[in-house]
Image (cartoon, rainbow, N blue to C red; front, side, top):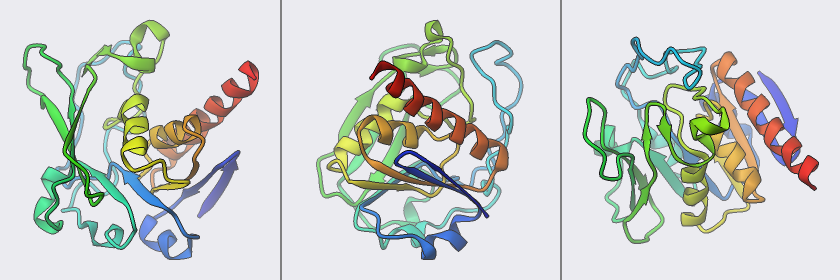
Length: 218
């Protein structure tokens, strides 16, 4: 196991099932776990808008069981439609509309997140279609995707607001660190766990850059 502390973020390289019992109290889990769909990205995306080291997602080759996350007080799980048979019933779902009226293609029009927050179902709209992306990941900003299942920073900031601005956020499937970047921007403490060493290094770099950028502007 490796531990990196970057400002208000503590990052662990390792298996979350082993690390979770050792962690201090957290207020919310906000994460995008492996769905159990054996995702592998094939072809395309040869431009600067898509630079991903690891094309596979660790743990995605077997069905995902969220039981180890359901004891936390606040939980928000992306991709939950792939394992909803293992979740309690809930009215509190988030819908991420990725097309916003654009033509359909071979990819999903939206992604779904299950929560135990007891709030109304909400829709977040932000275009995310190949190189066409809104927000700070827009290609005009020279930003490329760094994880095959990467989410927009704006979406994860919305998740934090939806969860009631928890002080300490845990992402046990951190990927490239988007939740950590969002948590920093929202002034929340962040704990991230990632089992893939390449994605862990990317997350460290992104979170450090987010904090450095703020210090420069300050």
